[in-house]
Image (cartoon, rainbow, N blue to C red; front, side):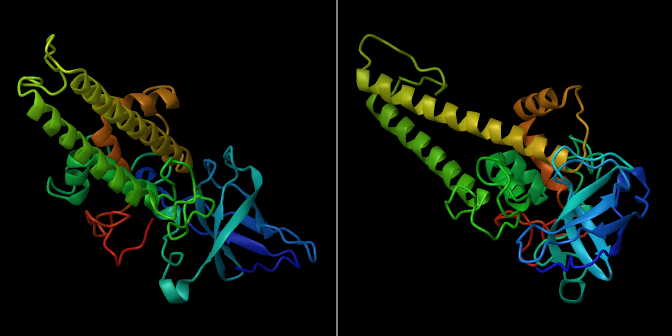
Length: 310
C-alpha cells in the first residue's frame, strides 16, 4: 500500500462501534505526516483521540475518500490526546465491502468491555461450536482465537498481523494448526503410555491414573515411564495456561477491556486458571459477531470459510 505524504491532508475518523456504551465515538480530524523523499518509512497519520484507546487497537480512518486501517501506539492514548497512528493497510470498500481484504476492521469488536459475560457460554445455544469446542477441546478453541487475533503459537503478535503470513517463529503454521497437532500428540502419547503400563502392571493405576499404586514389585521402568507421562502432561497444561493468560491480556489491552478482579494481571491469571473453558469461549465470542457470522469447529479461525476475520 502506498500512502501519498507529499502534502498535508485532512482526514476524519469513521465511527467506532462501542455497543455496550450505546454511543459512537465522535469524529476527529487527522492529518497525514509529511514524508521525506527517497526515505522508506511506515506511513502515519496525526490524529486527536476521540476516546480512550488501548495500545495496538486498530480502527478505520477516512483520508480524502481513502479508508485506512490504523493502529494506536504502545501505551494507548487518552481522549483529546494528539498522536501519530501507524497505517496498517488500506481498506478496499469497492471490492470487499467495509472491511480489509480477508479481515474486518477491528472497530467491529466492542471497545471498553467484553461483548458478553464470562458465563454466557450458551448465549448462542449449547450446541454452538464455540460452546462445544471450548468445553471439549479448549486448547484447539484457543488456537482459533490466537489465529484470528494475529498471534503465533506463543501468544505473541505476528510481525504482520494477517493470519495468512508465516508466524514470527518461522514454523509457517498458524497457532491453530500447532495447538491442534500438540493436543492430538499429547492425548495419543498419554493413552499409549497408560496402555503400556497397565498391560505390564494391571493394578498399577487402580481406579485413577493420576494416583498409581506402588509396591515393592513395581518395575523401575514402569515408575520412570509413568513419571515421564505426568511431566509431559504437566508441561502441556502449563503451556496452555500461559498462552491463555497472554492471549486474554492482549485482547483486553487491544480493545480497552478493564479487568474484572482488580489488578489486570491477577484477573487474567485467576480466570484463566479456574475458568479456562469459559475464558476461551468468551474470547471467541468477543472477536466475532455470531449473530452475523457463521461459526465452524474445524477451521483455523473458528469461522466458516466464507466469513471474514474480525
